[in-house]
Length: 389
Image 1: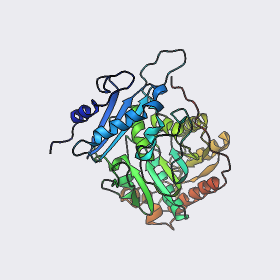
Image 2 (image 1 turned 90 degrees about the horizontal axis):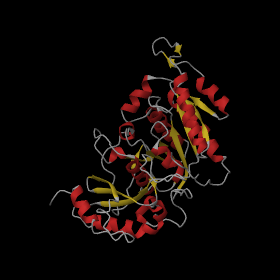
Image 3 (image 1 turned 120 degrees about the horizontal axis):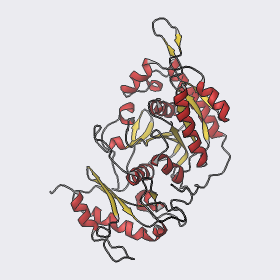
Image 4 (image 1 turned 90 degrees about the vertical axis):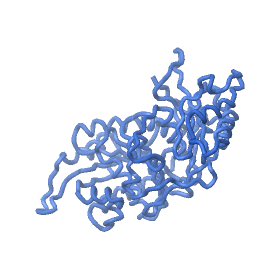
């Protein structure tokens, strides 16, 4: 059997015609990205955002054409578009967003009318709360906090899922000790992996650990949409999303398309980290996502030999920043060798030593997050209409 190639995918897509232009979508330059991995094919089709809902039949036709190729296990086509700034001609933008909410519907189902990229945030069936764990910069231990927070919420009796949204640096497969490709029972959706009692999905399960993800904005958004909505999450109380650092495509995609119950900001105590954490916090505020609070990671170090406490990066900066910004302070997590070792071993400290002081620090954060989610009475928020300049 011939190896599945980008050329073969393009040849299949050349049979799909744009009903308005009359040309096939390949010749018309509408195919903006093709990703092939172990029989799973993801294609981005760039369209005018105003035509997004009307081109749902075209998207489905593209999926059918790809699925008919030998060796294809699953085929996903998504419609992407560049935002237009009023009064300016449309121009390519590095932060384009899906133009058809249908791209995010599991199994290729059409989206409800009026729920495009700038429309309502679409619920993920079966998921009650979605919480983003974010940071303004890398290197603050955000993924470690996200993994242990998810596991701590599970220990508190909640049904929990964990989505690794860090496309460029997925670490959850290693941190949770999970490997192997996720199964696709119907060729359209994926079953999440199970680890330590929680459901998990990561791009790291679909590509080799050492393969660099050299993707532009639309492909990142498409991958996030697929992992969020084309995964059989089942019934969850909370889905924790480990965000990549910064305020780029992934954060905007989540803010625009997902009904986030809130965001948890992770920082270390020093001023430079708090400056970046402030940027991340303000980004969520601007897109109308409530900030559940700030976690101070690597807050202090306790010497394992002498028992002395050392504030390597300073101490209390995140608490002071939370008070200044008027958001809850969720707790302090120490800098400890056990947290690093257990994460590297695939058994985070909340699982490896649930009664130890490090695990109790994460459980205290989880209790604060749980209590805020339990007290949420506000109605679901509509997505803001974002203009990227």
